[in-house]
Length: 477
Image (cartoon, rainbow, N blue to C red; front, side, top):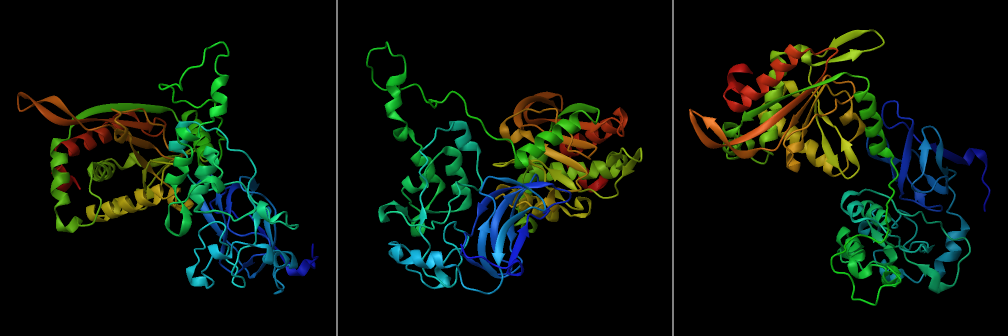
């Protein structure tokens, strides 16, 4: 390997992309040794306890070394990549290998305009029109449970190392094209991307292609006879859809690890009290349909959650002491004069709670716009750490899963969380007669150190009253 002076090699350290985070997992490298990088170019994606974040390099140069493979958890402040900033050309090894690369026909787009830097394996080198060949993974396809198949998503994949001594030409494989979330899915399901038939544009492997690769036809048929040795030969079982593996172990890290620790800390620190109320929300559902036709809400996400959020904001305005936090060090209750409204979101990476800053000051259309953006960003896995900090009160909508209600655990540092159950057509006494009405159950959990039963009951009763008679939004707001 070419040696470089200390002055010409810069070490890029794992930054603290949130507030006080101590570690992050490297999900995906977008560069390899020998690639040129420019100031501001994204070189890798990492997952912290808050979210997945792309890291840009702060200088120009040539990548000399990646200190950690994908899937490694690295402490903040530890160097993760070395870059030669002397302005010299890429090392000689890649150029010596270039004539051996037989895949030039797969990358006819010699100019940078045709490249897609977000696709892992494309690289971003401006001085070369072909990628350096790398060894394809030789690890056999592993078993994975169907439950993981539908739940996990994100970035990842087995790290590949640039070859310094080229093997036989037949062993050098072109790295398949796939976006980071697809590579992570393939890794979780134990799928070798080099065996997947791509159906996406320009030969890109899609999520559907990966799922197709683990469909029943690819089940390990040689293991089938290994079921009871004494049994007579029989046709393939029709009713069994489980994997042959008895268990699947999923490492707890990143968002899931942080959520688990936070929930345990919250449950055993704040004394939780949960109260329930069942309410007729028929008028609220009618208002939702009317707002969908209102020109002021054109293009905005209008659903029951919007009016529930507004109802909670009005209830907090009427009962401001509920919007507080407990300062253990100072032994003080800190009442907040603003509401950063958290919305619990189930994402492929786990449960996250981004919040709408200063939700109390927003009009209904503005609140609808903020809710829509929050949900879309969370589903795309692009929620930033800042979006999940400094929340004051949270809503969790368990009704979308068909659940009637629950006893939610407080988001750490907050005083209350409202759970919204499924809205169902039920028999209800309305104006002295039993009629089918839209009914739901609300559950409010609160920290009994700073919210007593009277205050908690008033807040929950106000939310219920508004949802039963939404015209109160006008008179109480």
